[in-house]
Length: 268
Ligand code: ARG
Image 1 (cartoon, rainbow, N blue to C red):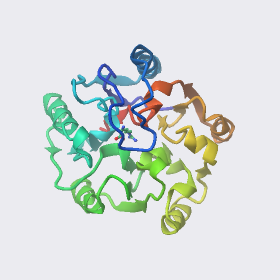
Image 2 (image 1 turned 90 degrees about the vertical axis):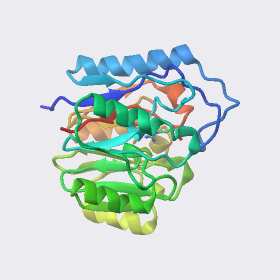
Image 3 (image 1 turned 135 degrees about the vertical axis):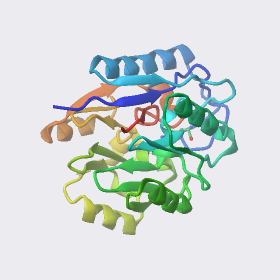
């Protein structure tokens, strides 16, 4: 019914909101660290309970956003394209990810020349790599990823700072059937037209669900793990044959991320 996946997660041991690099982050708002940890552990345990493998990346002090493990690299066909962060506050995370992959038997680990924030801006379908740009990843990283993975890249322009990464605006539900869900208003008119052409059957998310970061979801092809506040997506997902798995990650929302941001997928 679904294939088990291998994920990489990093516990929010040093999670803080001490700076603001996206509109969700307000350093004046306190973070409940024990609650953040408990919410993160609950997600990890849900993955494991369904048979998925969750690998752990050790968090480092001084890198409060490291919990958003999806940004540290992109792994397709077992090959690892490292990240290069747009903001100096996160720059140190890239080396920690590369070191983890090297230590875990990934032979092909590349440090990129151009800014890319990993799966924050790269999404994988059966045929393409969908690639976001506009706020973080450089358009030049798209060519670099295409060359590295040998997959055609579809560049998509993000236009709303609240949806600063592609994974806040679009989610691949099934990479085999190229089923996706996205929030059209997050994209430029030209990119909307591209998405409509590539994915005419896509599930289109309303603003209320996008604002709950409902598109920042992880799908194993059957279960769709998504923020529990994105209630408007539950029925349409069920109607398409998926099982929504609502997750409470409210503390991590304070950093501007949810389920997908904290989950890197290691694609064999
Ligand atoms: N505070 C982090 C940042 O702004 C959140 C990253 C969220 N990750 C994601 N994959 N969208 O960089």
